[in-house]
Image (cartoon, rainbow, N blue to C red; front, top):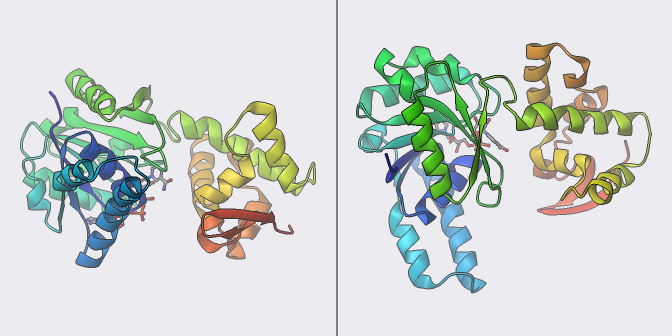
Length: 295
Ligand SMILES: NC(=O)c1ccc[n+]([C@@H]2O[C@H](COP(=O)([O-])OP(=O)(O)OC[C@H]3O[C@@H](n4cnc5c(N)ncnc54)[C@H](O)[C@@H]3O)[C@@H](O)[C@H]2O)c1
């Protein structure tokens, strides 16, 4: 099945990025938010990206207008009723996601596919919210931040996910111009299972004064060809997010490499959450990384 209409629940950081990419790929996109103000904010984020692209001469106004016509906002689950695919991108709380999936189960047509963008919950844990016939159409579709710039999507299958569902999702990811990898329904999937211990290890190195924060980042950037160093990346992700992801992975695997270092906990407790609060391992001025801060 070729996905032509997509519903997105939650138009925050991830939902707005997914909406942008799907509208650019020619899909009819319906984003559902919790209230008018949040919906306006989410849509403005997408419109702003397109307006900047026009201002920089990357796209024509006609193109922007066509994309805008593909993007629709709503506050009602019922508006998503005829979508071929719905992607849930609301906050990382199982209770909220179960409620949302139960609502979607009520309104969606029998052939609709249902995906979650969760980064740490098990996809199969959402099954109790769905009718049994829907389980073969449930999967994870894990996008990366910032969605318009990141070319990877992890497709997560549960034991019940159908082969036709996986084939449709592969086609959809390709339609977005992105690359899919299959990942297990296990904490961290593939990318975070490998990336998170590396980032936590870099924090342990900083904690043990192996090198300065700047030198640790420079070493991995120039020595390994990474686009940014691990402490810079942790600030970018958000240190509170890093701490909760580490807790989920440590709970699941019990291995010390997944344990949040004391330094991470101290920075979070001090309100130094990274770019979003203006300080973490570095001082930030908006999007701009400034000097490393004392530890
Ligand atoms: N931030 C990341 O780097 C990242 C990366 C990959 C996956 N994820 C996952 O994506 C999901 C969303 O994360 P985010 O960073 O975009 O969060 P966010 O807080 O930026 O956005 C969530 C949005 O969902 C909305 N929302 C809440 N309840 C709703 C409801 N019932 N109906 C409609 N909208 C509702 C909120 O108003 C908010 O705008 C989470 O599961 C997260 O784990 C995040």
